Amino acid sequence: MSSMNGITAGTAPVVTVFGSSRVGPGDGEYEIALRLGHLIGERGWVLCNGGYNGTMEAAARGAKEAGGSTIGVTVTVYDKVQANPWLDQIIVAPTLFNRLEQLISLARAYVVLRGGIGTLLELAMIWNAVQTEPQSKPILVVGPEWDSILDRLYESLPMHPWEADSLTRVPSIEGAISELDRFFQGLCQPDASPPSF
Image (cartoon, rainbow, N blue to C red; front, side, top):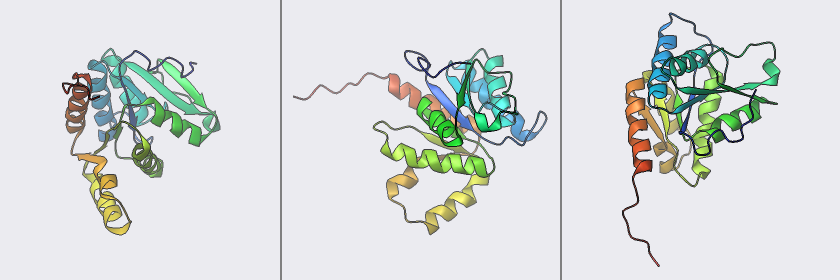
């Protein structure tokens, strides 16, 4: 077991991946998450997720098989559920809310795959949380399954334009990785503008 201290300081950026726990090896969604993890791992980014099975296991496995690093954030309320074996570091949160807080605060970017109500909660939480961040953090929502849900939210709920703009819909994990490539490359570019006094 590892604490959160020192995980992100001076290391590669952390990407938190959210998705379904209800899939297994051989399922299309499992294979998509496996590929996503591989692409994250081979870029040297740290993959973070909820630490259990389904797409969490698949993404962590993909990252490890590509030589990457992984973090899982589990929770004491699920103490009878085993963390998946593809994790380098495990953070045990005392509550579901603290678990989600850790998954959000550790990351520099987020990828949301298809999932159930837990994933919907996670999306809503990070969507709201990034509005208060001093630096932008991309939220990449993957796949057409989210389109009708998000369209309905945009139509039915009061929303500032920047709130809608803070989500980026992508059709595939390759689209998500392309967005992350651009984002992280932009962070590495020196600021060419002269200082103002």
